Length: 115
Image 1: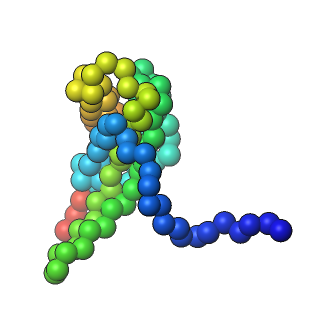
Image 2 (image 1 turned 45 degrees about the vertical axis):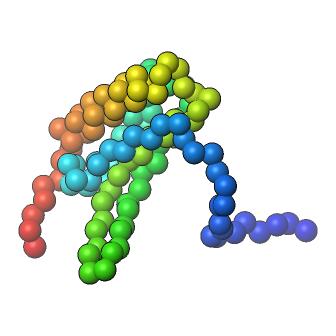
């Protein structure tokens, strides 16, 4: 008998990344990141760290009468991929992410207009 995959499921325990870098992509680019841009980020990050995850997400936060939505890119580095100190690696990953984001924004920027 085949087991059907679940659409939604609870994860009670998971390995926390040793390092997480967040890029406020949508705030500065005025648009979502493309798959090709994520691939380019991965190419640049491979110079700094071997194993990592890149997560592109549209984050919605709700609190009382306030709603916020932002498009973020998260870079997660596992503990077993750490080379050097966490601070040194963090600085290198942040620098690579900033350089990548600035190039993406310069290449293709959506203007924000008030409606």
